[in-house]
Length: 261
Image (cartoon, rainbow, N blue to C red; front, side):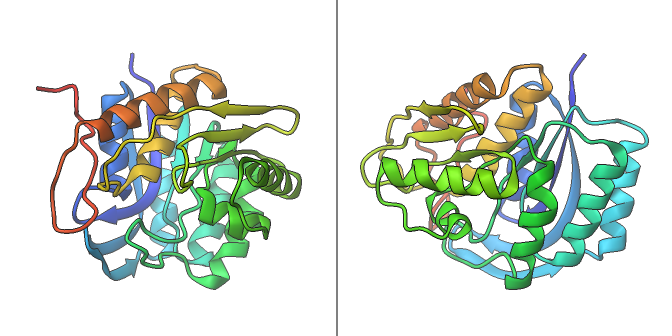
């Protein structure tokens, strides 16, 4: 029987990121995908032209509907644009005892558009991070969260320590923004684990963060430990990028169904 997995995130009208990317990723990683939509965005490969928040009470109703009927084995959390929505999500996840929570702290889109309001950052950090089994910031996000500039592997090590010690959750710092490699670093509070990634010469990276975090959640739901879930997820995203799908006039999406011919 397929394991159910929930994504809590915003909708991407172009289909490359957000809820749409999450559902594709979860389905193609062999789990049953469910969704709670936190915001509607008008966006494409060129950027975000509008964001419409879903009322926080309705976000709560969506969560209640899922958890009282099909209890998820893992939860991926993506775009959250207001502190009211974050508070409702945190309270609901604690109420239901949600497990295997993966938080992708989305602050800006791949195209550089700001997606998270300033007053929501502290709320996300203090209410959601402590509930997570792992958070998955990229280098710019890890720099914001740790308060240090990240240019080297040593900087990544220091940043993950700072973030873990502050919020008491495992931290996967994604190295895709590094100029030299695409290696990711996991710190679990005791040990550091490097996940080597091959740098792929493909500028179409719209939705990579959504895809990786959803793949991690999918594999956690299937019973894999965190290390193995990350390893499988990185291989999936590398293959999806390597397919060289080319859509749109900006940073295009990945080929989530690369193995379907």
